[in-house]
Length: 130
Image (cartoon, rainbow, N blue to C red; front, side, top):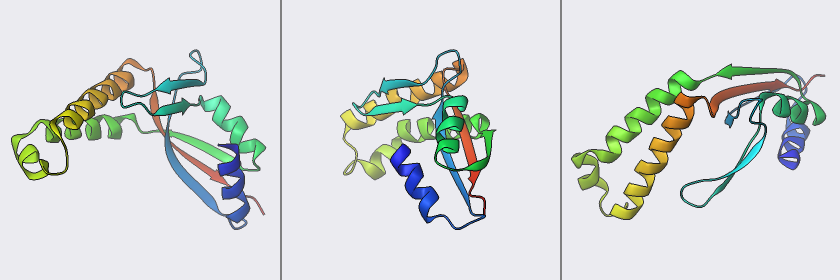
């Protein structure tokens, strides 16, 4: 992530803003690596570790906005779509039953993690000063 944010800072114009959405974990859990259901590895920062990372790359005016409510609605909607017969019929040629089941499980785990407080969806906004 350091290389990514160093590059973003480098190409961002003075007084420019970068906005991203990511998952963070609570401070008491700490930054952590997580193997996702479908085999990917995810590195989850805490708010404080993200703050240090972005400051060390030169960013200022760093703000965090909790987006859990929007993501809970999105995840619930996605779950309903994935299990609907019309979605199954429309995307049968693109999504195998095995993949669909993996997506449903992954989606359910995501919803549980948000509701239980194990992770938070945040929008992060940071500035490049003059």
